[in-house]
Image 1 (tube, one colour):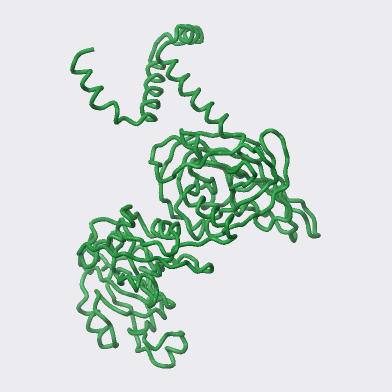
Image 2 (cartoon, one colour):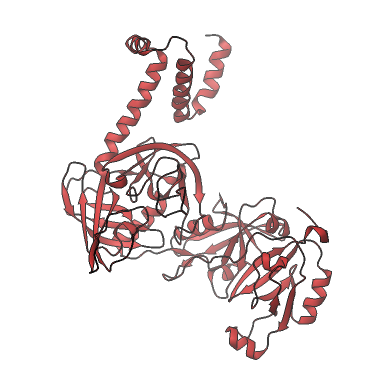
Length: 503
């Protein structure tokens, strides 16, 4: 080998990801072999006997996956839950495999799912929807032993549950670190799809930090194309180290939304193990989950909002409203701030920020890198404790349509209207009394009964203020709306025929 090649290997090989090298060798070997004109079963046998480099690479890859399967499968369990239900047509538990009895009287319904043994004395990590409302739970191990399962605790907001079986010296899976996952990493999904016990499928991490679909209240999913089907719920998503990096929970099927029935089309979702571990630890220790709480309503950015707030891209979470007395207000966060990083980690959208905050313990100091009026700032927030009944604030806004503020009629906030809408005495702005359903404002998500608090960040205190600002507003117009007590920002864009700033 030439000195030049030696230098290249010395300088660059240590930094190459081992997983990438193995996969690259395998792919190269397959293409090399398939491009040969003389491949046949006889040639294949000869290459294997001779130890050809291409076959050796494939064999090495196969052996690695076989070793992971042998290592993890004993810790995977099949869960059968039974509940007494009133008769209904075609019942379905998301991603659990149902086979309900039929009849007009109260009946027993069975659901099959999966779980992961995480301690040798019998604690099992699974999905809440696998065991929800169960009157009895049966747990089957890969060695055919059967146990009665007891629910230690469940957290519907993340769809995580913990079971306990009585045993000692049980096989366990090693929990990894989902923060170390990258798009393209190889993963394997373990579980019991359609009641086919102890099945293994393989794929890649397709995306991270998925929060679309409203599957759960708190979601920050790993997306994978490793086939996941009904019955896989609660099973393990495992990396090439044989460590559990996620808990399989839902799929996107060809004819349904995320979390609903149907077969796999290569889009599956798993709860990151870091989130699941936090929930499990709290459920085992106290029976309740303690989560960090920011005390602010947030929304994701689209191109129009990013432009309106001077943000270079759509990454981040826009602070819609900061209720008084909460952690955010005490730390100095303001309406219109855009949170770009949390403790040094880039925030992709509001769903990821919610996950990052709720994974933190109350009392933790979270450092937020924000943009405020184009200026970069760092705000340290001491997180409070998230109320147990608090759901995720869902923003009203839709993608802004084209147009202007024409079609909006407003009225002052009178005492009678304040009482009717349940508004506090400090509420400012004007109320939308009538709205043309074909207007750009309506298409942008604004509704009659909403309050307009500001236009292009200028406060609206009267009908006269609104009329003046509406005439002056040109191009994309930023409104702060109070919708049912929640403050949100919405951009209304002009229609093409009216001109204005077209982005």
